[in-house]
Length: 231
Image (cartoon, rainbow, N blue to C red):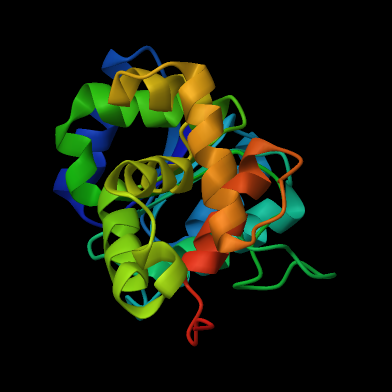
């Protein structure tokens, strides 16, 4: 798999290259700013893009904006963004439905998206597993991001607060982008039990059944991110 990396910090950039190379991936370009990242994607047409959210010149969210533009130009291209801090809005900007024109912060309606904290790289096996999931068209959202969202919703939303502890575990794993089989393996329950939990969660939260895995993740994230949940 050919990968373009966007990271301005030399140490982390080199560490990423080594991790990817040892996993059998080819880093075809390591860009140090958003402009170079987008140019590299157009020139090299990689199989995946991995980029920091904050990049020069302003160190705000240039990497995220570049990721959204890349996904608008190449809708099927898997993209993983890395963040130093938990920011739930970043996940929604990246995953949310893309409006005509594909402008910044309007996300994508397709899969092949990841939003992970940089510290996740230390768990090399887990990090590589998430990359492979995204490369295969899946969605990967960092567990810490989801934990913050679920904890907030549990306090502010009666429906989430009324879920059982097991249902909240399942809800969090769905939001991370885990498949039913992966959820069952993680919680040591059958896949049939996972389906039953998800059905009850959807009923409790009033969520429609999503037609695919990516939209399932997006629906849950949008629900957990509501600013003024209904009582």
